[in-house]
Every structure is written in C-alpha cells, then in structure tokens.
Image 1 (spheres, rainbow over the protein chains, first blue to last red):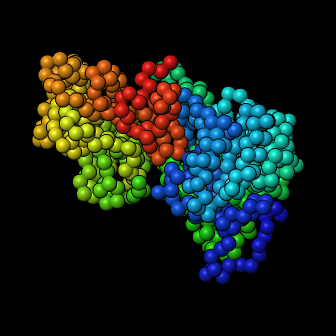
Image 2: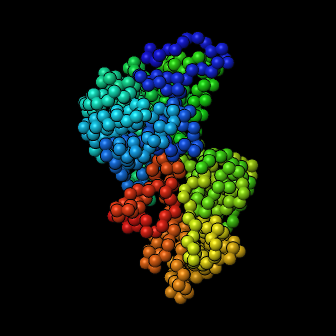
Image 3: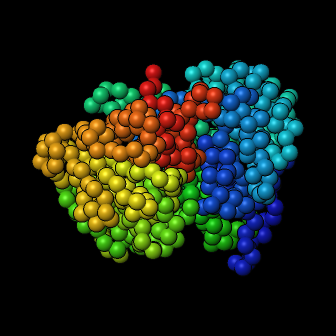
Amino acid sequence: MKAVKLCGMKSNGTTPPDLSVSLGRLTLKTPVMVASGTFGYGPEYADLVDLNQLGAIVVKGIASQSTRGNATPRTYETASGLINAIGLPNPGVDGFVREYMPFLRQYEVPVIVNIWGKTVEEYEDVARRFSEVDGIAGLELNVSCPNIKEGSALFGTNLDLFRRVLDAVRNATPLTLIPKLAPNVSDIKAYARAAEAAGADAISLINSMPAMAVDVKTRKPRLANVTGGLTGPAIHPIAVKLVWEAAGAVSIPVIGIGGITQTEDALEFIIVGANAVQVGTASFTHPATALEVTEGIREYLMAQGMSSVNDLVGTVELP
Amino acid sequence: MFAETVKVLHQEEVQGGYRVLALEAPRIAPGVRPGQFVHVRVPHMEHAVLRRPFSVYKADGEILQILYKDVGKGTRTMTYLRPGDRLSLIGPLGNGYPDMQANARPILIAGGYGMAALYLVARTRPVQGVAFFGGATAPDILCVDEFRGLGWDVRITTQDGSLGRKGIVTDALDIWWKEEHEGAPVEAYACGPNGMLKAVAERGMERAWTTWVSVDRNMGCGVGACLTCVLKVYDEQGDWVWKRSCKEGPVFESREIVWNEK
C-alpha cells in the first residue's frame, strides 16, 4: 500500500533479493540505517564498519549553534537497556559542516542529519542552512529528545507544537524530511497523521523512552540530569507496537527504531509495517550490528522466496 | 582499531581477587601502546548493552594480558572464562602515554590495578626511576617483582601498614620529593583512583613536573561516539570544553584537566 512494490515475482533462490527502499524521494541501498546519537558523525566507527554498506548514517543531532550538553554522569546501564541524558552536545551547523562533511562526502552512504532546536525559529534556521549544504540526503527532525530542559521534548508530545515546528521546517527545506516521533504520547497515530499532513516524506519512531534510575546507597539519581531516555532491547516490544499503530495510520514510509540487536528484531518492525529500520544502542555493543542485520534480512527474504524487502512490509498476520 | 574475536589462553588469580587474563589477539595486541585499553564484550551477559573497558597490562607479540579485580557483575562473570573460550574485543583504544622527554627523570604513582596499567610504561621508558605503589592492604600491592625486575625502585605504602610504609601513596611521594629528588625535571605517570590522581596532579603542578594521569571515567562505546566518558579540559582560551576520555584520553597532562568543578 505504501511501499513501492517493485515486483511480485518469486525469487528463484539464486538472485539476491532487492533490499533497496524508498523514503519519499530518497532511495536507500538497504533498509538498515544507524540511528542518531549512537554512531557519532561517522568517523568514530569507520575503522570497524564499512560505512558504504549502511542504508544511511543518521548523524547525532545538530542545532543552530554549538552546545556542550549535560553534566556527567550521562549514561547508566540497566537490564537490557541504557538510560542516557547526554543533552545533545553538538558542534552547530557550521561546525558540523566544517569538521565532518569533508569526511562524509568521501563515502557513497546517504547522510541524514538529525536536527533539533529550542524554538521553532531555530529548527527553521537549521533546516534552511542544511538545504544549501552539498551531500545531505535528508533531515530527521528530533522533536522528542527527553534530555533538553526546554523545547525539544515538548515539540514531540504536544500536537499543536508538533504541527507548528513541522510546518515551519517543511517550508524551510526541500530536503527529505523525517520527523522522529516520541513514544510517550497517548495516541501515536495522531502524530503520524499530523506528520503526513504537514508533508513529511517519512516518519521514524521511536525515540528513547523517558526513564530514571536511583542509587539506593546515596539516594541520588544515577544521572546528573536526574532523568534520561531508555534505549536498547528493553524498549523493543514497545517500539514494535507503536510502529504497527503508526504504520496503519499513514501511507508515507515508516522507519522502525528501538532495541534492534539482531535480524529478527528488524524483521518484526518490517512485518508490522516499517519500510526501513535504524540500529541504535546495539552499535555500542557490536559496531557491525547494522551490517549483520542487513545480511540477515537478505537471508530471510531468500528463505521466504521473496524478491524484494518491500514484499515483506506490513505482512503481519493478525488473528 | 580492530574488532576481533579473541581466544582465552589462561586466567589465574594473582592475589586478593585480582586476576590476570591472557588472550590471543593477533590483530589487536601488536599495536598496543602503553596506557591504551581494550573494550571487552563479556560473554554470557546478554542483558548488558555495554562493553567493559580494561587497561592493557602486558602486550607481547600476539598475546595481551589484562589484570582486573572482581568488583562487579561484569568482572564476576569474567572470572568464569576458561582457556579456549572466545570473546569479542575492540582495541587498542585511547591515546596512551606519550614518549618521555629527554633528560627527564620518570616516576610512577599507582593505586590498585593502576600498577598493572603502568607496567608497559615502566618497560618502555628509556631510564628507570622510582615507582610509588599504594593500596588499602598488602594484597592490593601488585606486580612488585616485575617492576623491580625492570630496574625500578618500588616504594610501597599501605593504609593498614600490612606492607611497606603505613599511610597513603602521596606520603611516600612527598618524602621522596623532600629528601631525595635531584635537579632533573620530573616526568610523572599516574594511574589509580580519581582521588589519588587529583592529589598527584596537585603536587605535580606545584612542583613543576610533567604529570600524565590516566583517568577512570564511566565509559560507553569506547570509540568516541556516545559522549558518556567526557571530562572538563581547559581549551586554549582558558575556558573549558568536554573531552572524551576514550578518544582524546584516557591520558591527560594534569594541567589540562579542570580538577575543581563547581
């Protein structure tokens, strides 16, 4: 319904299945990207991962001006998860373009820049400036970082603010635009529909889940920011449910994010309606996770006799 | 930097809960410089999303050794590793200690497993000097014979007086400075708890030493992506910036670090 069905032919078992996917005007070679905040700006993992084999790199969030981020401790490991409150330290648009784009332009991999701001005007400014930068494949709109004291998370959990920032950014850039949805809303479908109505090319979900941990010896929070966002395998089933709901509500492509550590996790997202996925925290554990998942999807499609990953999208068999 | 599946060669308890783990790491081991670390995916801990960082104790050819203490869930699980087991390693990571300045007199200051982390420093300095080892009690004093075998003058301090002088490691350092040091510029290398590092750094700055400290911060990815392990470092304008201890560190010259926060 929403993915481009390339062909309905059965794979003959020798032709490798087609893994390419379309996110609006943007075509990715594979459906497996690396998620914002978990892969730096690219160079950090270049020794360990062939960046050109990734569907896309979504770089860590960039704002209009450089920021330092939160005090430490910034992360705390929990059962099957990680709570973080890094606070979006960033080099600003100019710093990012100067320090990292020359490196990223050496690769064929599409670069999607995650952007954020504290005001609608800041979002607009960042989007406009990136529109003029060579080598940017798209923008992921971070309206849902839980670790910024003002602004960001509110844009993701207040439907009116969400629409306002999205309209402003849409008018400011012709680039492929992907709002990243917050999980902590009462009706994810409303946000998905609002994104589609505002002209988003795709939506991605979920961002981290607001969370907290306390050291019982000192009775102090584990994070300097007191609360943070939970990521990792612990949130995967939550993400699957929200992706399923969002995908059922819109006809633009959906990107599933949340706790992917193995092929099966990515397949779940695709089966409930995601056209593509992002691997996040698992890159910390095993930097090559995204590539192993890509290979796993290929093998699964061959075993299923499917010629394209698009054939699997939204094929969940409900009771 | 490599990601490598390595084989456990052996592991043994040295003393007091401290263990040495020897690994066959043909890609990682040959490139290790003193002060660098490796990031270990601890087997049988699927619920843990983060690797665990360990200083390299020894690196000889394709074999590297880690000296660690059983202090938490990760290290407890590591005690069950047996010869032939395999584990995933990323390394070598971090900047490590730089080469020593000509004509300097090296001293080492270490607490607990910091002693093991300074072994490669001791082995690669062009001249030997005094090594100050401190710990709570005798079993916390490690590798003494090995440092002496390399020609270092090891001075031991324990808080309970069970081995060497009773007191803390900086007591012995202060006595040496007062009574023994000669004119040569001092280049100090320190590894141990953060409180010890700060005490050593204060002395180094006061006494015009070049003082290299290896900081111990909570670490996430180990490769500079997650920004968990940052610490405040002065920039050229005297303002502070965050630096990643996994990438720009873990070794910093003491004057770079903002020691008194708040």
